[in-house]
Length: 386
Image 1: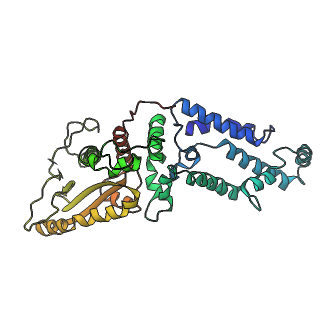
Image 2: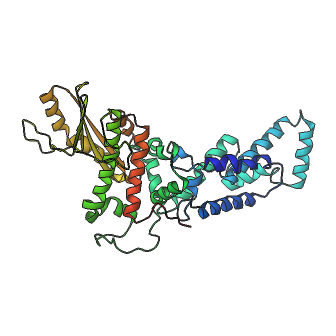
Image 3: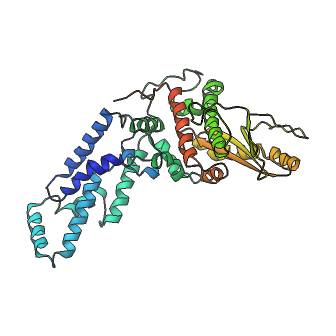
């Protein structure tokens, strides 16, 4: 989207305000741009079009909206002319001609007041109103609004949840498919029952986390893919010898170690007393720092995000205390929990700092999660949808 903004839409900067163009023409330009994006698979038609124009740090895709851009530029230009017309007589003459002709430039303030129901217009306020209009449009859509429920959720970090969009290095076509999945508008009006359990309606939310029949296969594969990501990054961080340092060829082994660190995956931990939960997802033993890290991974839904994060933390509390007494070392429990559509809690960043330097884990984790979901919904990542 950045390339489109800088090399295509930016050309309009030379013409907006100089050529008399009616407001609906700018809206038609936006429509034409979306049609081109759909043709090339960069935006999928059932996806949320308003999301295209939101900031990438707010779950959007950062495309410049020509209509909004034109309103802002023309308003700023008009206000600049009005403020300096007594100094620059040429500007006073231009304003007089524009007012006489009744152009969009001359009536911009009146137009914006009517369109957005404003009492007064200024550039800073206009930017917020345009953003609010987009959010209002999203909130009126049954499926598209579900992702953006997280914006009003107190326990959610929107900035962290948007990292894969703001900092990720994703192909535009792949990004379009992942956003399409988050927008949930996949099954359209097919309705019907879940083909796996045949007990609930076939919805994205049900098939992503709630279907009992998918628990032992699809959900487990998704969990294992995330374990694989974290395991590889931990191995690379601690210089543990592995055959392949790339994710695709990496194979998770139950125990890997060097003279400084040992990493165990899904291994029963023996203790002096009987402990119910003694098989953590990942256990990292730092022999130099005398520290144990218990990493527990969870994929859930937004409604259960904070609850699952707390449960994962408390689940291994007894084991952590016992291991600390046995080995005489510090112990940390890291609940690495994310919703199936990539939303994380405000504590997520704190947990990551205890694990690895996680610019890369943040992207890899979200992308692997989404890829598994796409496969579960039988959407090929190489397929285009017009």
